[in-house]
Each structure stands twice: as C-alpha cells, then as structure tokens.
Length: 166
Image (tube, rainbow, N blue to C red; front, side, top):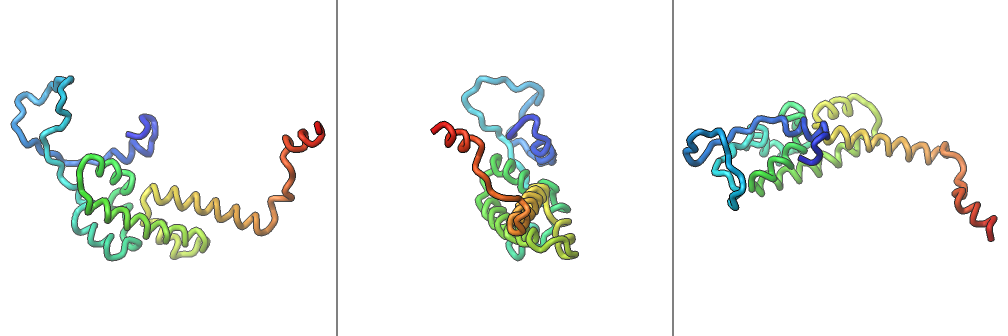
C-alpha cells in the first residue's frame, strides 16, 4: 500500500482476488513469523477484468474499452496486482493501453466538453479521470496565458530588494 491513509489506494485495493493454497495447511488460523522463507504457497487466480477477453479488447483498441465497468480503479489496482504476480504479458498490455488512453485523454482536454468527450469520460477509470482533470486545468492555464489574463510579468520581490541593496 502506498500510503495507509490514501483513500485512492484503499479503494484500489478493495478488489476480491481468489487465491488457492498449494499445500494443505491445517488450522489456517495462526501464522508464526520470523521465518526466512517469505513466499506463500498459493496460486492467485487472475481477476476477470485482467482476463483474455479484456486483454484482447485492450490490444485491439484500448480507447474503446469501458474500464469503469471492468474495475473503477483498473490501472491503480493493476499496479498492486502486478507486484504479486509475474505476468509480463499483462504488464505490456496495461502499459500499451495506458499510453494509448493517455494520448486520447489529453486530446479530449483540448477539445472542450462536447458529447464525444462526455461519452469518453464515462469510460475512464479513476486514475485517468485525475489525469483528465489535471490536463483541463493545464489547458485553461495555457489559454489564460495566451489571452494575457495573467497580467504583466514582474520581478520577484526578493530581486527588487537585492537591487536596492547594491
């Protein structure tokens, strides 16, 4: 977990992942610490939203997949999940999908709020929505700068004090 009090991390980790023990463990109640071997003898099943159907859809056209229906915190949970399992194929699919979707998301920040943008925003996961919001704020700042609504550029007050001293 990134930060114990980070609500986004808590929500991202709030996904059920099926696990099956590889060995018969009697009692299953108390685990004694202090052993050198930190591996747990269990298999972790791949969640449906990381399964072959979703992977193929992401490979085909990542921008059309509705990640909110799959998992509201798809990319953030994916980073936690990939720390548990060694799945290079999933890692590659997620990286490619994130890059493609990020490019499309930033394109939508430049186009304003038309109906295509609204439909697209409904398919974004929480991480992408945060990036969209940051992109919109940046776009608005650039627009204000181009319209010269920030006012004149002035010297910092520390520089003015330094000039008077010399």
